[in-house]
Length: 511
View (cartoon, rainbow, N blue to C red):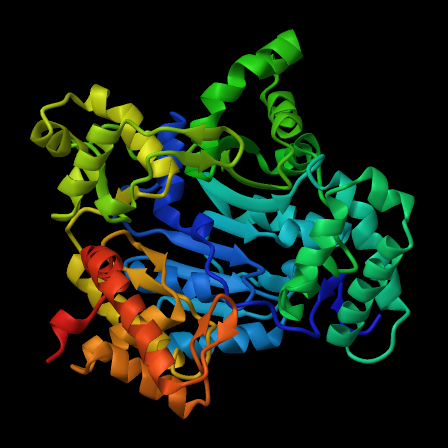
């Protein structure tokens, strides 16, 4: 059918999102957390490949934040390749190379062996032939000790939604016009089906709200997430079996929140599975039945190599704050563990201490008159909540800062015209941080030496745009300025100090 290539949508470009699971240094922290060998020392050079990079925004952010490393990527869609190549050119990123070749012919003999190969969503959206090509590519190009990140749709979490997706796909196959129009018509059809009292919707009460949620999504998201011809959620055991011929074994869950919840899930997994959970792949399958999560983010690792020795730095890992102390919740919610009350005094003290800048664990513990062992549970929880995270050592910061500044200027310039690139590269972490469009315009105004509120309003006004509140556009200039002033005060007090800590702002480096 028109609009698909090897089962993968090419008629509509993918969204411009940034996925922090792709960042290299949190991957290394995940391996260390799981007691696995860490293949790359903090701040060292490495070779990274992303297969199926979408618009390539995450790839560009990583290249800017890690000029000491080399990045490669491929994507079926030539528009995706052109987008990231243009962004890299504007930012002067010489360490990023992209290709529109398919998985089978991407390895033309010119590629290096990789420390990291990453795929976010792609495994779920391509057919059996492409999956086999991916495994062969990994087998040829992953270094000993190297890691593979896979984000993918998982079973049984997707089970009740598979029929909804299938009936919408069948309707789109039979529709007329472009793919975006057929997607909208398919969603309308599903709504009419529910309106007729269909038994499928009655016995699966979460399906109707899911359809309603999808009706509000952009076609660029829906085309790739729901309307690929090849679209197959997998059981963990099937994925592990597919990767085993390349010498890969499950190493760790990539997301800190998922790792933090593992301890709470372990007794139930043991009680249910008994001796069978000696097989770690089966234990992971049981975890998916316990959580019913629809998406997994996993790190697989090949044996061998020359790993960076854990504990090589006596000062411990470097940490940085991603939030202001006032952002610390009294009660937090984790994806599958329910609510938790962080130990308030120590958690607040950690965030307060890190407002002075990145610190090593030993120094942080000493400043708070605690031992590293006493600090460990709190640091893991704050990491799981996204309030702190790994930072790189200070060496190399100047080069990282220069590269990040170039890309971030391009991102802020893009914010004048569109709400697409909503993250900034961070030299302190070797990663990136999400930043919304209004905040990007505030930062651009600061960098230009202008008043942020009036600067932002002039940009929006020139584009014929308005600020929204509660989903509705504000009509008068007075209303827009008042809303922007309120947002600026919140941003200035809470978000701006954190972005300064991360090296994501530029007002102090303008000459």
